[in-house]
Length: 365
View 1 (cartoon, rainbow, N blue to C red):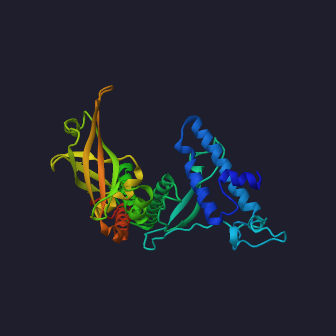
View 2 (view 1 turned 45 degrees about the vertical axis):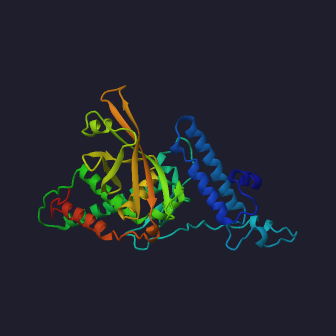
View 3 (view 1 turned 30 degrees about the horizontal axis):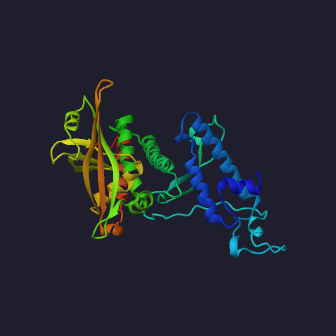
């Protein structure tokens, strides 16, 4: 690997500064993460990620571009030969790259920020990324891979539960009295608690307005200047479920209405009657922007059936209903301020700890 190869691999020019190089590197590493592919594609992604990582490491070790104060382009310092850009790529001890991003200082705790990096093909899947920072950082779709953001949320949720379990174990060990086993000592109950924590923490580390702006483009703008987006969603059920007959009875152009919000899901119905099920978005990132904005009444939706498919190849039969969702962002959308969820998070953890120490029983469903 030489300087020219490194530039070509990352798609950069001598005029690119440190921020531009880091942005292109993160974009490429997010694009070629191996667990998004299967078979030969996965192997090709790993090889490509290795090349990208090698090129980035070369720039860090063998140039001065990451040196504090180094510049490129018109603002670069000149060398003895008079070349304006060589000084930025000159051999100098590089500094560790710093993670820059918006912070929610009121977040309940810190989380890890992960990035992809290369490794041997036979390596474990959980080592295909590394931690670049830890803090109360908001997720930025432009710089942090979505699947790694979700992984970060799972990890911080697990950390909080394990810390709570350790405190409860110490209290039980210090207690002379015999205590009874709590009602949350099953995997199913623990998963339910973890799911609730995930929901509240995800709201603290996301800005729905920023996410919507970065991942979607409006279909049009109405006469009042409000942006209208078009998203593909769906409903589904098999023949053993009550919603099966209701879904098969739907016709194209039928209107669908929101019935209730259940954490980060939308329960929908037909003409305010029986529920049809929870709406599925084709793009999972939309759960983190569309639903929060609807919950805060900063947007409106209109949903219509596009197609109904009944799949009879296997038993039980299944039905899939494709739905067009039109999302109108109200002018007040920029006033969005996520509510403080620290009380809910603390209550979940305190109740869990109290139950583990035998002081209370489960009081919620």
